[in-house]
Image (cartoon, rainbow, N blue to C red; front, side, top):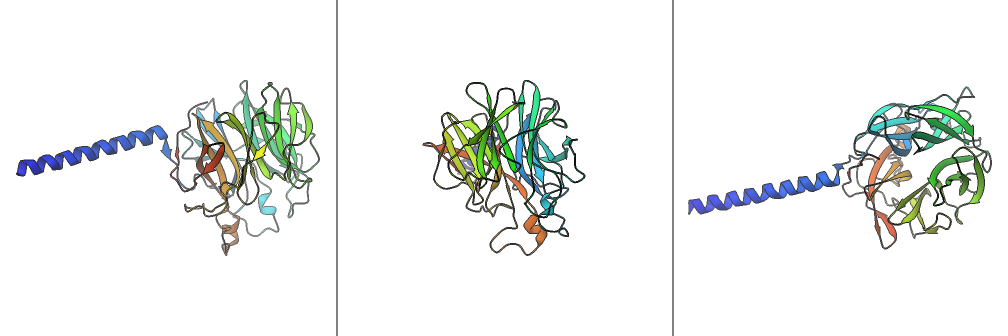
Length: 339
């Protein structure tokens, strides 16, 4: 009788060990569990507008982000979102990130300057950045901003190439993708036209011909275009979550009902709407890196610093029957492979 009991106990223990091994193996295949939040800037605590790219030289993932001076509660108006350079975080897997540096961008024709919302692509061994540049530090939004073109061989030091001639002097948030015919298209936010999404075209990434409005409705900020599941997708920040559009040719866009990341999440720093995002398609999976203002709850945090600070989060997108969804509360296992 005792031997039978011992045998049963050993059998149960062996089964439990096998289940644990299978679970670990499955998690290793899925990737590493990303923390919430995925990243907070240790200097100003104002990380926003992320873009993620593989650094071929260092064999690491780099995250570039707008950095706001969230810790400074003494300055007036919206000066706290001005006056900073682009921050860089690095990761080996896309799940856990650590602060690296600021991007070395020497284009500073004004004593005060602001760098916002970088877009970075790699083409034939050279990195191209399309950066929103604000010529100063301002307490309101009534000032010009333009999109610059910069290049780099290492993702750290950047050479100024040009200031793009686009719709007007208030354009922000570039996104660049190759078109099916081998040319390039840039989508950006035209603030003078109700913050609509416009586009420009180029054959070489240097010379751009401005186009017109890309989508019929208002569109929103931070357009991000990517290819996944046999379609092209565009995600924009409409200030009540992220709108999702789809297209078969990157010319005509159809918006799906509702928004993703509109309903607040339950994780740390994730209990508010999601904002301006990047999407990384890797190994047939799509990860969305977005930012939050954790203190902008209902009611908002009493501390100005808590209302100003921001965090980067990551979640996985799902697609079913031509509709994209995102469960921000589900555990996110990230396993970005080298590009």
